[in-house]
Length: 318
Image (cartoon, rainbow, N blue to C red):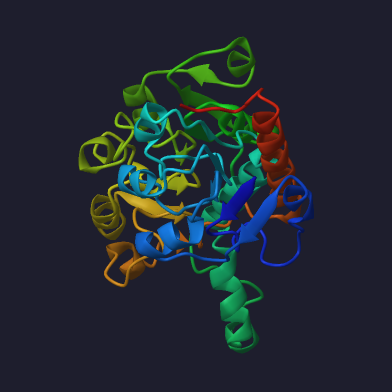
């Protein structure tokens, strides 16, 4: 079978191998594909389409009738028109659990950065501010202790629960808002309404999928229900936040700070108002990127393809 990867560079910039996937068929890997016309040309008569963030639209599927299965090199699959794929009998398979440890770890990296603004102080020291200063120490931003603080987690699946476990180790109270509840979750945190979470949390972190219900879950209306001085973290999907509303809240001081690994349009656009907020930490969608998690992702995609070829598809999301 012919297989095409349209945007493989993010997963494998050169430190992994496509060999195991290539052993399953005739594999062609492109680092990046920018336009649908080029995608159609590259797909050709391939039966297996593998993508990370390239949009798979109904139009693309109409123009590529040979495609029999779509495999996503990620957990999120909102870039694929799953309804159009299902109507054509095409399964869409994702990788649901490869990055739990990595994203939870990165989330707390962002939380600790907000609490201490480590990067500001490192830069200041290199600028000789400490050397030239009158005191043995100084700080450029308030320093915050996590013990006793309340962490609100929106989305309490695998990653949300992993973040909750870390929070408990720091001595934090954990609140969770989720579309479903579990005994495992109750052992980590307290399930509450969104309104209660917004009102009581000192730090809020997002770990829910992007759906019609969660799009812009953080906007002017919900921000107004938060505590003054709250901190916000997002390592999930950029479309969960209305960027302009968050920027306004950061500039007004309603939010003390935000740390975002994702934004609504990626790569971030020059006119994104968050770029003008000094109290907003921005990273380029890298929470998932440790080699260990990417290796798990690659292994799972290989197994997804193998299972589909054997007539036992798994991780089908449509």
